[in-house]
Length: 456
Image (cartoon, rainbow, N blue to C red; front, side, top):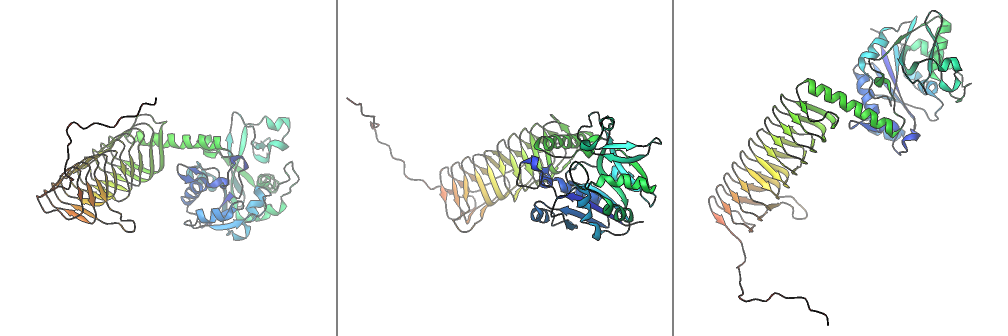
């Protein structure tokens, strides 16, 4: 099998994005556009992947640091042909595939078909037929129907402008072909740039057949130049993902109102209401129900759990049959055993909530471990931070924590213990004991409440 080099062009500024961030680093589904392209390229198992950078080069190097890529710098943007030329010395002797960092929805199958055409007598060109080809380069064919040139919109005649088969810029050829053709490119055109598309005419002049293929959907080759196009592709991507989830048996209240910014794995009979956002790695077990406008990040939610509206869950593992929310915030390190409940306006962090335990409402539990069947009353807080260090709170099985209690860590509440409402507990509590800390209640009979003075 021949070697494969993939060259990804990512040097442009993206002026129409009106951003300090390089265009290809703008995110689609929570991931930079160029990373989508790299992930697709990786599926082709290339021997080398080259990213041509220019504007925001340092930002791109940093963003792509975890990828095995070689960088080539295009210090001055002089067109696509000039960009590819910057990677020329790094190429091997096999096939070369040219991609674009702002075309994030391209599929591997379309590229595999293109590469299959390539040998010393053939090259591959991906084209697309559009009802409105405005702005695209047109594919010019000879009387035999072979592609012999690409004419850019600004250089096209009226007859050429009527052509609806358009250039995507994505092409494949041998390294030897590319090294012959690139030095022959000219900037004698309306833009004063070196067009990579001009290699089509050079190929035809050599008798190299230009084999064309088209993607399964035109959206695959749609690029991003502005915020509106970015938003459009985001919705296309999310709808495609929603369709896949529904095909697997997931029930979506509205497939147009779902955002997955990472990977979402669902068991059977999962229901997801409107406006939910999933980030990172999220797994929902069988029968999980997610209420509207929840955000779930890097979490695993066990079977038959219910997440009520407007809950925010991050870095959490729930074992199953759990009740969460509404308006709950579960922070990283939260672990819920079977049948545990975290209710409305409750915040947890680095907390183990034991089987059947309940933190029903208006409480904060951080750096804590709750045993089985613990009941935490409304307004309870674990005072885990002393201004410098975090400390642990341990609560035993079947303990009852009264409302408005403050547990000052480090502290242990024994199993079966009861904390009276309104108590501040700073010392360990013995198993099955009652602990109460309250000031004496005073009552004054016939007390007159102060009143406002009436101005004369």
